[in-house]
Length: 540
Image 1: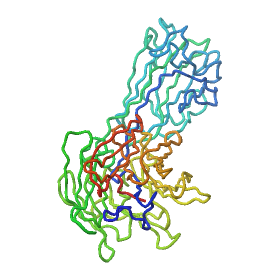
Image 2: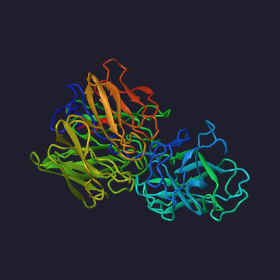
Image 3: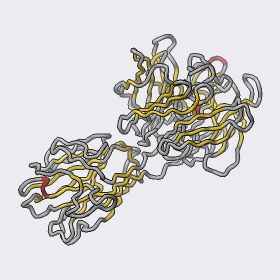
């Protein structure tokens, strides 16, 4: 964690790439989870899955034919002799047909989308059709599982496994004459009824009773141009977002009072708006700055945490909704307050601190309070020498307890305790000297494990996608001069690698961001030499 008065400290809570580099942790204490990122699938290349055992016909998808018995086909690349695709190459759709089973039996052939964290308002769009003048009715269901990345579709032609929620049933009464569309027709499903962000999959189920080569109800269907469209990003779900537009703003703090305990001033420019630079005097240079959305209005609040005499510490929060002060004693001198976050899932950041164990290897403890001056919850997790890395790693809208620890052999391990206080498997990632900068880099609504390190004078960013376990690398920034300042600067729902680069030349200090989706570099001149970027305030 980084004090305003000690920008490049190397004390017990601090590590550096070099004597000139301050390093960051979390993408801002006020970061709520980002919405899952939209994706499309045109079914350009389909690999026929393996019958009843299931496999991936498309990367990150899943298919399994539960027809009894399984016939000579499963899901397959579109057949242009039957009909052409909705768009793209003429065979770029995925199909299923009566040969999914044999004789006269029930067809139950499943196609599962990639795992996503769904929220109410998300949309599923796709095109489907059957043959022209089809004398056989055909039928297809669309179902939802809320059990994460599960591919459990049960066994047998009737079972649904984890996909118990029926979203759509096309032609359930087996009407002919176009009840199942005979030209490409788009269907739109809007997700509703979820208690909160929910990890799961959507499934297409070619489900036909009395199907098969000698049955009366099955023929040939195709699916094309699948789209997953997340609901509009809720206001303030980007870190350091003071106007609630879903983009990280350009914000720095400056010691305008002079001395180790001088008055500090916050300067900000609202990213994506025409609003001029604004300023607010708030806090002292000896404070820790811990902005977050404490009032739940979708906008980050200016906030500092101040150590005090007799170990007493206090949060000073300027509520954006009412422009009023919230002053609340919480924690003690020596705690790490940069772990504030939404621990109860109510859309408001909670007061929180991490207290390291008193000696090497001793138990560390997390403390948080979900209501003003309410009861305090304490959670033993971690030990002296660990580095806290809270985040919503399971995508349920609540912060989890995560620590980074030296796992031996030159490797670091990440130990997570879920918000339900259940220990999760250890993840080995990076080295013990890496600095942790978790955020939602793949846009699936879950925090990803991420680190940065200095490599040949540059900053190397690495993160582990929660959506598909892929490891990503970006080289961005200069390790000797830049302050890492990650955030969602382009508003695409994904964390971006970003730095703030100070300069002794007037008006040349600037934020630099690398779009995770676009790989486009954006520069915004802001701040002055000696400032500190708020997006970097959690430093470990």
